[in-house]
Length: 78
Ligand SMILES: [Zn+2]
Image (cartoon, rainbow, N blue to C red):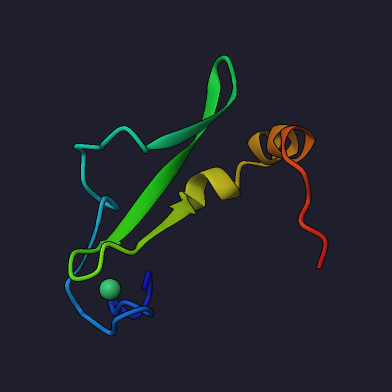
């Protein structure tokens, strides 16, 4: 959805994102400490309501933030 602009559930192209916009909704970040958070880019298909969320690339490259996140979250075992 992020790259294709196409919904994987219903194949609609009515996909909208918060990425690159200044107005953000409530689901805009994950707090990883009292002063640090990872911003979320949200993608929603307005045909079926499917939502995808991605951490913002600049935050994913922030090693300090990612170290905090790794301590806070549980790794998904493959
Ligand atoms: Zn859809």
